[in-house]
Picture 1 (tube, rainbow, N blue to C red):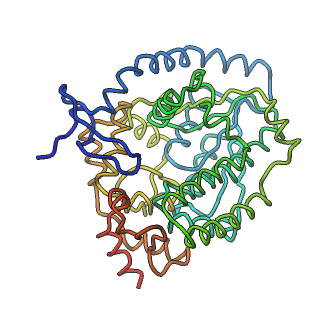
Picture 2: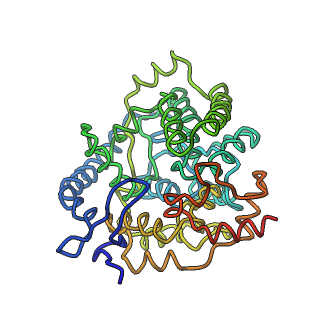
Picture 3: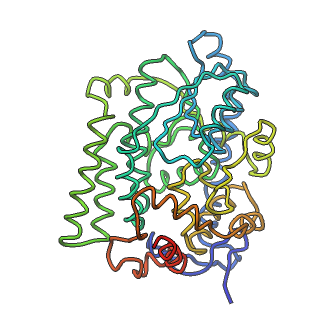
Amino acid sequence: MINECNRCLNVEGFDSFFKKPIRITSSGVCNICKEWEKYSRFFQEFRSIARFQLSKIFETVKKKEYEYDALVSLSGGKDSSTALILAKEKYKLNVLSFTIDKGNFYRGVQETINELTDNLGVDHIFIKVPKSVMVPLFRFGISTLSTGGIQCKICAGLVHIPILSRFLLNHNIPIVLTGLDLWEIQDGYLFNLNQGMKIENPFLYTLPNLRSRWNKYQIPIEDCLNLLQRFSNGQTFLRLKKEFLQITNNLLSRYRLNSSEIEAVNKLKFYDIALTALEISSKKRQLELLKRYRWAPPRDLYTGELVGTDCKIGGVVNAIATFKQKRRMWSSRIRAGLVTKEEALEEIFRKKPNLTSICATLKELGFSQLENRLIAGWNNRIFGDLYDINLINEINKNLN
């Protein structure tokens, strides 16, 4: 019989990727939920304070008559779309939104962005990154998936952050609004506490471990190399390292800020407000809000789960995750109160992964097999906890 936490979906066992046990305590809750009990009151106090301060911050900014009150990075997914709607409709901010198209959108996302920004009357800028620049990164990330998302770390650190930074330098905008949701802020807050970092209000200022990485490009590169080395050895690691550095050097040559730009960005004073996390306490209510503004998830989502509703690369990763991995991911959302256990299970089992769409994306990236280039391939015990080998075999049959 499975010994499951009374609050979340965690089951007793060992988390081989994070190298820590999951225990069900005598009170019937797992040690992760138990640990959160120590910090949840302080976290909620931060949220209450930020909510109280929010209107004052916005009113002060409006009185100063900036060109734009706030900048919104709009991916077209449910969370950034929520932030944009709240900024414009609830708080009446004069917003500039921008989207970086990296060739990873689900079908229809760009049209959704156009419709939403038109309906809201928001100025919007698209930046198109050539597919030829991003495809090598996406290919590398998917073929080394068990390192924990190389493609996401590098996409954010070497492409998104430099472009966002230049927006802040070129426009005198006092507020950045993000679509980070409640569980992401909660997990980031807990991580920072465990690292012994001093934290300002995480709803109003970037979490210190994230802000400290802005335009410090060697940090995400070294993080990824350390993960590659953990899961490969000898000549395999040297080949992967060489390929990875070629990819990152190409991105740096296009998007990195020079030293004077970095110095100028570091001097900027702006709020970094997690508006979706502040305002949204229930995924159900969030979807009701989005529906009123005619936002709908992409029709070709690779699973029934409403996660990563903009990026099809993330869609592949989520689709092949094991039930054990999905238990862990959804447990964070349950602890944040965004969904109930029943709602989380409904999401996970809504429908089977869409093999046709998954294979189409993999073929676009040049895959004839969904490969794992790390130690022991998909047969490694750690990777077996993360990714569904039976589904991967089905995908590879369909790719042939």
